Amino acid sequence: MFLLRLEQTIDRFSDLLGKIAAILFVLMLFNVFYDVVSRYLFNAVSIGMQEMEWHLFAAMFMLGIPFTLRAGGHVRVDVIYEGLALRKKAWIDLVCTLVLLIPFCLLVAWYGVDFARESFQLGEGSGDPGGLPYRWIIKSIIPFAMFFNFISGIGLMLRSINILAGRHQDDDYTPIQH
Image 1 (spheres, helix red, strand yellow):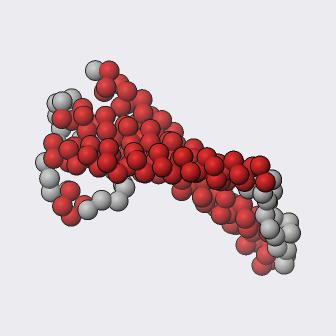
Image 2 (image 1 turned 120 degrees about the horizontal axis):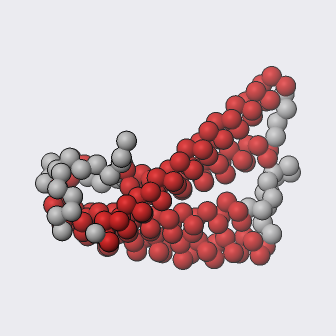
């Protein structure tokens, strides 16, 4: 039961990241609306607001990946996968998580830390006048998001182990609780 509770805890964490990504999407929507209105109605252009659009998009995308993984919306060959029995799906998810997802997350997080640290040490900011300072903030989302994706991958791995151990009996098991 410990593994089932741990899986559920990680799922709740991934759901929280999905909610944060949704909030970032709404903020990005307001940012784009403001930028378009100010540009076309008032002929005022803000480089900082334009850069904030891609900062919000990058954060939304990177923090939404763990939720997407938890919800089963990640990329795989669904033509083959969807027709398989639950136990075969669990084996595929387990092996692919161990062989592909976890090493990828660790590799990107490892290099992402240096990427963000170098940006911080250089005091990197926008190259455009009026742009956003502190580019290290958006760059630091890369290792954090990969760490969160790693945690969500552990949740997927635990789900697979729990299925193989018989703790998820329903063939229509869906990881998202409505």
